[in-house]
Length: 288
Ligand SMILES: C[S@@+](CC[C@H](N)C(=O)[O-])C[C@H]1O[C@@H](n2cnc3c(N)ncnc32)[C@H](O)[C@@H]1O
Image (cartoon, rainbow, N blue to C red; front, side, top):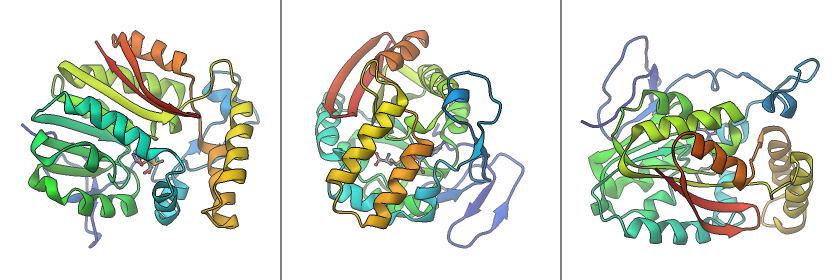
């Protein structure tokens, strides 16, 4: 039984609102839903993220503003390999080649699915469910995933909500690329716990994300990463670089590899392996 998710949705590009009851979308369609994040929400600063007192530190920030407003800047980042997508792709593809499938794949924060579309062969996939909050990205994803045909479901929904509703014991791979660092620590724990629940026996969580160096506090990470953006991301215009740096400062909450291992371990995903590392960009695989 494919996992199609339940949501209130707008069906792109026509903007027809159907709300309030579970539904089963036609396979291969893009569904655009409202979620707590797409309504705009109060993102909490680092101190809250870490469970510290909350006075005077909340601020209105939308972690996907940059992706919602335009997908073009991120496409430039990808095409100039500024976040090492190429190296991550090679490492994850190698791992996935040892799983001929057919696989049920859940992709959380799938974006335009450029890379997952290259990591997997169409014949290897029984079912692909991708979710993202950016309708721009999902429009591109729909095209990128055409070779996978009707086995694709794209949901414009919050990844944590999708994961919570995912059926138990269903997916062979839960994949997430450069999206987990937008979540709070508590949500990251939920990511691992719910992933474990929805994984089949021998299933794997594959995580590509930015990670702080061990012992590196978030402010030092932000300074270093934004320093690298200033020095090396010359493919972007000054305005685009400014936007990216602001997004990173306000919305990026990467953990260290050890912290992530601990979260995974608490969820029963005790076997952890690093697949790739390029500066702060890492690929890991976690299994029970
Ligand atoms: C840096 S992009 C990564 C896209 C793609 N996975 C990749 O590896 O290139 C991060 C994506 O996560 C999405 N995102 C961030 N928070 C999300 C959430 N809570 N639920 C769903 N998508 C989210 C953004 O809209 C954006 O498309």
